[in-house]
View 1 (cartoon, rainbow, N blue to C red):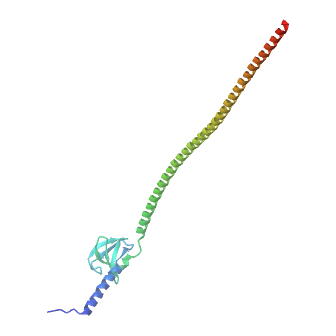
View 2: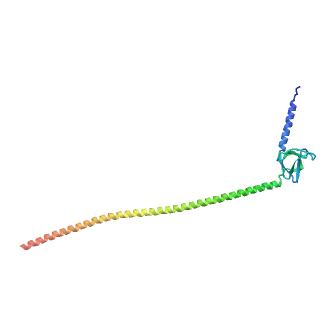
View 3: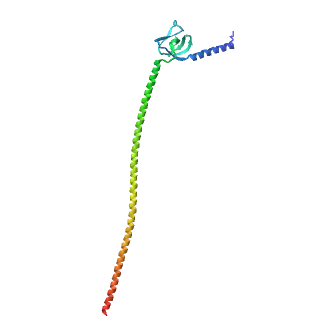
Length: 209
């Protein structure tokens, strides 16, 4: 016997399946147990059903679907059951907010401490670089001063060399002049002796007459 499945049945089944999936997707959100001591997740919608798990205040649950006054939820350890809607809140509990703020404050303090350490290291590095720069600057100034002194010595040396060369030339000129003067004096003496000799000879000849 063959069972015929009509197109309408397939369409309605598909729509029903999509509705369930969409409803599950819509209600799959995290909510929190309100500010009461204990709440039980039960197998069904009512106190007559067996309690599966007991939750305390601020415990998170995942809402799977909603039905009247009840929510079908899933606990963090995977237990699934029903709970009264009035015991569940979408608002994040203050304890969790305080815990998150405390964590953020601790992280901020840690980041601040790291920033201070980095700033301290950067300051130490800057101090070392400044000391090296000042040391190099002093060395450069000393080198520049030595170069300046060396240039002055070279200039003085060049001036002294020029003056020495000039004195050498003057010395040669004076020597030549002195030799020429002595040459003239010697020649004058010889000439004077020659003249005196001539005059003496003439005087002797006159005496013989």
